[in-house]
Length: 317
Image (cartoon, rainbow, N blue to C red):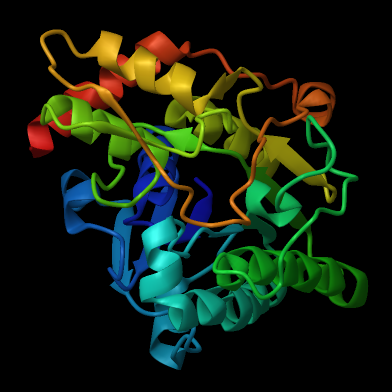
């Protein structure tokens, strides 16, 4: 039985990780301050003897009592960070802190316990990319003063933190760069395209496409993402690894796809002006490294994944 410490454990991706590790027979300690995480995401786990929930903001140091309760930690997964566009405007300081101070605090835990450490980075570190598809050796095209900078710049900083702790202290660090992920436990109101379009279609509201709808995204179902993350955790890979689905869709194509996936909806596509000039125009992962190092590739089709996601969103409306 390994002991996995997961920050952001009540969040969208974090809760799925908690669930999967518990299913393997591991002990899991979830840390969350519920700024964007939800108790509903983990309430079914609270009855598990191997599961512990600690309500704490990792932007602040862990107390001696908390660290005593941890016992031996084998893996530290730092997944605490609000990640939606509405969060960038509402709570930018919290985002800056959790990916900077929070990275230091969680890396210190990994250092003390000689644990494998994984930082949840993002495709946002590539900015509005000039290279397509995006490979891990691309340094990005990021607007450091744009509205997304609180998120993408601190993710870049967090990657640097992990890199320095490996070089200076020998911490066994890993970096996962997560591309657009969707699935059950997403917040319907989080501002990202999947919950936006799905919620609008289920409510028979106009599907809002910004600009001409030619911007592209690549959508990875959460089960595929979690499988890739767990393979990366189990490896000793130190290099950043893209985890995402390389199937690419324009926003207009995806809007039509969602309308077709919701029988009976009266939703029509409505075009609106672009909100942000630094919104990435293209997003597609090159997953050559994930295939080679982790023997991982996504398995869930968009049709199957959106079907399961719509079922979840229906239960929340």
